[in-house]
Amino acid sequence: MTGMDPRRVNRWAAVVGVLSALVALAVAEAVTAVMVLPASSPLFAVGSFVIDIVPGWFKTAVIAVFGTNDKLALLAVLALVVVAVAAIVGWLQLRRAPWGVVLLVAVGAFATLSASTRADASGFWAFPSLIGTLAGVFVLRAAIGRLRAWAEVSISPVSVATGSAAGPARGSAARAALTRRRFFIMFGATAAGALVVGLGARAINAGTAAVNAVREALTLPKATIAEVAIPAGARLDIPGISPLITANADFYRIDTALQVPVIDASSWKLKIFGEVENAFEIGFAELLALPMTERTVTLMCVSNEVGGNLVGTATWLGYPIRELLKKANPRAGADMVLSRSQDGFSASTPLSALLEEDRAALLAVGMNGLPLPLEHGFPVRMVVPGLYGYVSATKWVVELEVTRFAGHAAYWTQRGWSDHGPVKTSSRIDVPASGVRVQAGTVAVAGVAWAQHVGIDRVEVRIDGGPWQPTRLADPISVDTWRQWVYQWDAQTGNHVIEVRATDAAGTTQSERRVPVIPNGSEGWHSITVSVA
Ligand SMILES: Nc1nc2c(c(=O)[nH]1)N[C@H]1C(S)=C(S)[C@@H](COP(=O)(O)O)O[C@H]1N2
Ligand SMILES: [Mo]
Image (cartoon, rainbow, N blue to C red; front, side, top):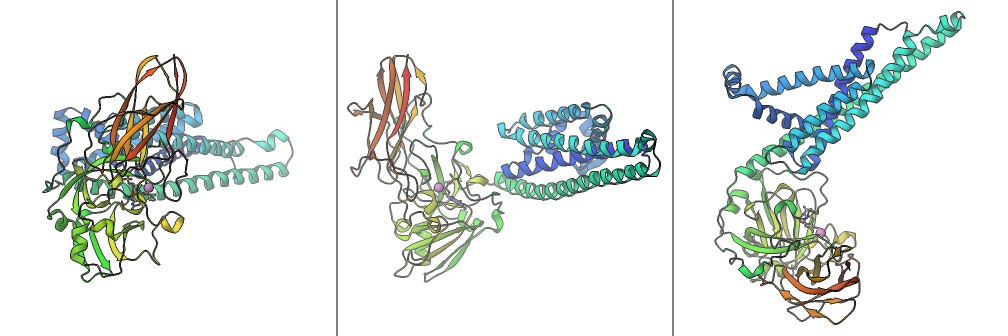
């Protein structure tokens, strides 16, 4: 390895620029895949942005030339622009550092802005471009550093400087070979990694986008048995209180899925089998053709700490699991239904709870008027009022096996959680937030309380360990939903502790003793501290 032609160094710098763009895009695709938001990927966001800003006559001209391949043409042009700009980024970083980084960050900022200003964007849409840009900058700086090390050793006439003959020249050749090798190892490993991650993530995102398109085109049937209209008195108008119905986007999400299962509804099937007389399968279209029931139900996670937010209420549309089980006709002795999801999660639900005539255990397809969001189980999940999610609410459900508790366990029950998971009566203070400062005078202390399938009877609060005070309860939707409550507190100056406790319709009052979430749910009174000025 002797003297290195500066033009060759420039070419490699340009290639390094392209490598950093590749890394940025691959990482962005991966983040997009993890977030299950295919449209937030930078190439598509920028592409959509371009479509929005080009003038109509230009669009018409492009369509005239490329016909239905217009989108492909746009993406090809974008790719060319990316390669060209990336080459400049690499060259700038080598010859005019840090301007390469500056240009890359500027392009990244543009992509971030394009993604986060899409009509349907949420704050999350900025993440793929942001994190991708950071990764690109990291690789750009590291790889240009190695290129520089290689070029410097190869160009500088070490033998002349030291004045000695063959020895140092050989040493310099060896150093040149080493720095060259180090550059190519880094380059090769990074390029290969980016290709694998990028293409893999792109495939996942394409699959997600396809299923999203199907989901969005889906019209759910109307419920035959509709939820009774939500009573006007069920909502208290208090700023900061949990909304009576949790929006899908705000609904807590708990699952073991690293990658949200993406299921093509048309090939979805539910198998009902095990200790039954009549095992059978049902497909999505068949399910939608059955008379649907609508129910507003509060769902909750056993891992919810006292005062936590792993709880939400939605209006679910689905078919009663009871009817499917009746058709399958369980044999005597069976006492559990082991439901399994596409991704290997399982839950053990008491057969009796699923068969109860007045418990709306649903095979749900709709959530708050829309097909289930992918994260919440599209196309079909279970919802069973009164039981924690881990023993009842299987998302992406594909199997119901009728079996027995004796000798069979489910995903979490194999890991130390209780076989049975009835929801414990709980209450939470939403406002004021703990630790805040409020003005002396009348302060609304408010929140929610729930005792699914039993119902809430009363909620009380007490200040600084004083006597329990009744709160005003909003009207119930049903025993399966939480109830808002409020207490108008005459707040006096100083620091105060406020506690809440609920009593359910069976007469059981929440106990003060704190119990950890494992094995069957937290217990204890939620308390907050506020300072009154
Ligand atoms: N397939 C699958 N379904 C699942 C889980 C899971 O990990 N995988 N978690 C369960 C748990 S523990 C809870 S609390 C609920 C949460 O449902 P959500 O994410 O729609 O709020 O889903 C249940 N269903
Ligand atoms: Mo859970």
